[in-house]
Structure formats: structure tokens, C-alpha cells
Amino acid sequence: MNRAHTKKVTLLVLIFNLTVVNLSTKIHNITLKNPVMTASGTFGYGEEFADFIDLSRLGGIIVKGTTGERRQGNPYPRMAETPSGMLNAVGLQNVGVETFCREVYPRIKDIDTKIFVNVSGSSIEEYCHVAEMIDELDNIPGIELNISCPNVKKGGMGFGTNPDMAAQVVRAVRQVYHKTLIVKLTPNVTSVVDIAKAVEQAGADSVSLINTLLGMAIDVERQRPYLSTITGGLSGPCVKPVAVRMVWQVAHAVQIPVVGLGGISTAADALEFLMAGAKAIEVGTANFLDPTVTVKIVEGLEDYCQRHHIDDINDIIGII
Amino acid sequence: MKHITDFTIVCREQLGKHYFALTLRHPDLLPPIAAGQFVEVEVRNCREVMLRRPISIHDVDSSANTLTLLVQIVGNGTRQLATLNEGDTLNLIYPLGHGFSLLGNNPLLVGGGAGIAPLLYLAKCYNDRGVRPTILLGGRTKELIPVREAFEPYGKVLYSTEDGSLGEKGLVTQHSLFFAPYDHICTCGPTPMMKAVGRYAVEKGIPCEVSLENMMACGIGACLCCVTDTVDGHKCVCKEGPVFDVTKLADFLENK
Image (cartoon, rainbow over all chains, first blue to last red; front, side, top):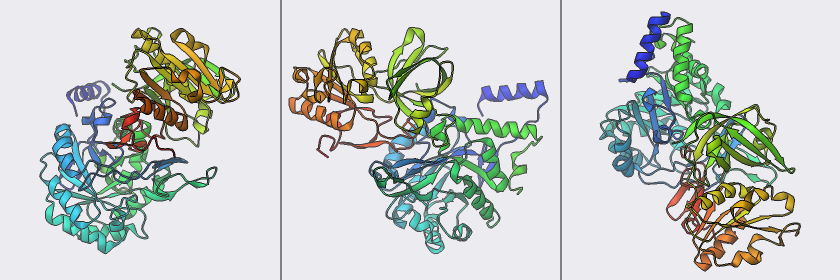
């Protein structure tokens, strides 16, 4: 919280006799100033949004999926709008871990929020290599291990759809990575609970869910798929009920903290995930529609707690 | 610096069946806007539309705090925008992208269809530098060149129509004055047109800038959806473009 904001809050508390609300939550041993984080791949490295919001208002930023080598991603077109949602097939375009550490990290390391790196790969060795390099960065307190990207041919979701494979990659990364390890799960499975339990067993400190739902859309005029890759990942408000359900199921099945995401665009959406058991949430696609939406959600959570006389947001986490 | 803010529509003008122009006013001074930059417009009250729509900036009047968007009705989003009236508000993220360089002392601006939109403000910016461009506007018919007279104070205006209803009959690249010795070419319009213009420019060694319009989600370089292939790999059209030096685009000039 910046000084001006603290002052404003203090003033309001004095004038209106409001409750001081604690929005701070914990993921493993990391304290977030509030539960609102940004989802990987929807917020760049944070810098893209600095014109619009004070990044220090956020609980956390999860930066773009990072791989061992620089990746070009899939060919254009790699986006299609669908009812209350969109399909993407970006395919992990990123600068690669070395450039990230050398060029991007120095630019973003002093942003006053918790910065996580989403770690991706095509092989266990690649995941470990990236995690090891990120482990060296002082101001990155954790990683989000992406075993759920639906848009890459090798690896990605392949690791996240099988409990044994998921456990294997988590165990390997756990050996080389010493800080908070969040594992991002795919919804494209028969039982997300089985995967969540497997990665918990393998040493994950937290799980985040859901990554995008595998989908497809066809341009009937041109008689061909909209995406160059035919299929892609569905995100946006349309996936939210699926995500809330999965977060609720997983939160009841594991001991480690759950981070919820999938279609969150308002404070009420965020509250659904918190009540379903998420200790923190990530805002994704909504950043594209309104680059200030994350701060509006933080303010909305504060307002909700005021209205309901809740002085600690943790009191409503997992009440369902 | 980019902004997200509400504008009020102060003028709505229908331009034939397929186009309309919205002039938007903001209570505050507008930030500096480069010719070729665009806005991301929020589309409200439309079930089919979730994402903003990128629309190029047609004109800017800094003294009146207004900017004008020229919109072609192509789908659900633009159809919904067409229902807006004077007095309505419109939420914009702007100014976005990387505009034209304003290089050259004898430039040619080539526009086709909705691609003529950024060329008006571009022509004005050239005039501010003391340069009067040649402006070549093309369309299948006269009706599909929605703005004509507005260009006339800012340069020599030429027309090409495929049916010969205005100017010379044929494509812009067949116009007799297309081949004059220009020292810079800027083009925006249908991809086949821009490719033909770009190929000619490269062949003659004339610097050429093209303005691309890939499908976008965020408009600020975060989602990486709108990429185009360049000699330096995939680049976001929204952030590194929409205006590119044609020689930096990979495979753009190939006939496909």
C-alpha cells in the first residue's frame, strides 16, 4: 500500500468510523498485501500496465510463461473471440529465461508487489533449468509451474493431464527450486482433484487453477478454423463457473493453499473464488478489456468487507 | 502515455451505407497523438462482443479536444458502435501503437477502403511539417471511398475506382500518377493492395511504411495475439506497429 493510499484510508476510517479491513492473505510463506494477482500471459511483465495503474496496489504479478529458450509461439491468427470469452493459441511466445534474467528482471524487480514467474517447458530438464535460474533471483519469491498450457505441441498440458507425469515434473523441480512452488493445473482432465493431490504429494507448496479450457471455433463463411493451430485455450467470463467448481473441489481435497482463476472480472467474481476456498485469485482476460480492472477488484473487495462488517478477508475464505 | 477514459460523442455522420464517423470530445487536453496511432473502443450492450475494437484515428483537433474515428461496419462490434448517437459516451484506451515516421519531402499516401482512415490526420501532420503529400484513394466504387473533400486542403488528391465512377478506372497501383518520383510511400488498406504498393516501392528503392490491422485483444502488447512475422521474429501489431517499414516484414511481399 502506498503512502497516499494509506493516508486516504486512515482519513476515511476517522470520518466514517469504518472498519479497517485486512485484505492480506498468505500463499505458503509469502504474504500478499491483498489476494488479487494477475494471470500469466495476460499482463506481460507488468510494465505494459504501468500507464494505467499503480502496480504496487496489486497482491502479486505472475509474469509471462518463460521457457529455456526464446520462443516465437504459434503463427497468426492465434486469437478468436467467442461468446463471453476468447480462444488463444499464443503458444508460449517469450524471450527465454536467460534474457528474462538479464534484461527483464532488472526492470521489474523493484515493483512493490510479489512477482512470480510462470515456468514452462517441453521436458523435465527444461522446467528444471528455468526454475534453477529463477531460483537465483532475489526478488522473485516463487514460481508458478505451468504444466497446463494447451497450446504447445510438446510438454505443457501433456504433463498436467496425468497424475504420475505431473508428480514427476514437480518432484524434479522441487529438487532444484527452493522457494515457493505453485503448480498451475489444467481443467482438461477427468479429475482435477487427482492431479492436485498428486502434485501436493510431490512437494508443491500451492496449486493454481484453472488454466484455459481446450476449445475450437470455426469460421463458417471461410469454412476453416479461426486459429492457425485449429484448437486453443478458452478464457474469459464463460469459463468462470467451471473454474469455481474446480477450485471448490480442490480446496476441499488438499492441504496446500489454492489460487483461483478463470473468468474473474469483478470483485464479486473474486469473492466467489475466495468463498470456494481460494487464498488468492488471478485476473486474466479481464485485463484486456479494462487495464485498470485489478485495482477496481481490490477496491471492490475492501468495499464488500466494509458493507458486510468483515475486518479480515481470511474470514470468508473457504466458507462454502 | 496511454490513457483509459470516457469521451462524449459530439458528432455522428453516416457516410454511405458502410461507413460512419464519430467525433469524440474529452473535457481535458488530449495527449500528443501520432498519425497512424489507434484507439481501443469498448463496445457496450452487445452479447456477441467482449473485446474492445481497435480503430485508427482519422482526425485530431487538439484545440477542441476532439478526435474523429472513421468506422467501417464489418461485424457485430462495429454494427453496435453504429447505433451510438451524439451525446452518448464511448470508453477509449488511447493513443496506442507506433505511428508513421513523417519522413520524405514528396510523399505518396495510398489508401483503400477503411484504410483511408489514418491518412487524413497523416496528411495534416505532413502539412504541419510544411510538406504537401500526394494522396491516392481507391475503392471498388465511388461510394466505397467514404471521405474525399476533407483531404483536399492537405495535398493533391487522386482517385482510383474499379468501376471508374471516380477518378481513373482500375486499382491504385494502376493509376498514372502512382508511378511519379515520390521519395516516401505510406499505405493503409486491404492487404493485397498494401502488398502491391510495397512491392513497387521496394523495387524502386522508395522507403515504404504500411499500416497493418491484425485482430487484437488487448491493444497494449500484453496478450501477444496480434503478431506479425518480421525479420526480428513475431512482433505485436498493436505495440510495435501498426505501422511497419515494409522491408522489416517477413514474407509480406510474397504473392500469397
